[in-house]
Length: 153
Image (cartoon, rainbow, N blue to C red):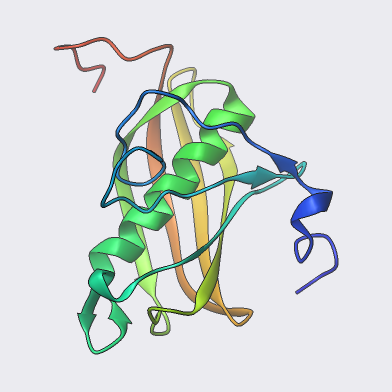
């Protein structure tokens, strides 16, 4: 791990969005991941340790939880760097190594390419003990705000 990302104090801590019940980042969600986010000039980061109730089999983190973590980090990277809310259009995930419960992981997200005024391609990475365990690319739709009962997709 290089010196910059090994020290959270060298990164910008991103504020929580109050009043949301998001499974990934909502701190008021009693069963959620409660992810915190930090940024530098290229990446948004999160460090978290997933509890046993997120496993699929004997300390193996469920693939759906890994997918959620990747979606969340890419969403927050888009939010931070693009200054827009986003909705996930599609995600492709490559699972490379097992992610285990009760071991801290580092998650990274970044902007790859802005396709248009409304579309962006993002990348996400999950590391455990500095080994790449999963990587993803996703297409996201940029929106100005969330409105009930409407969909920009």
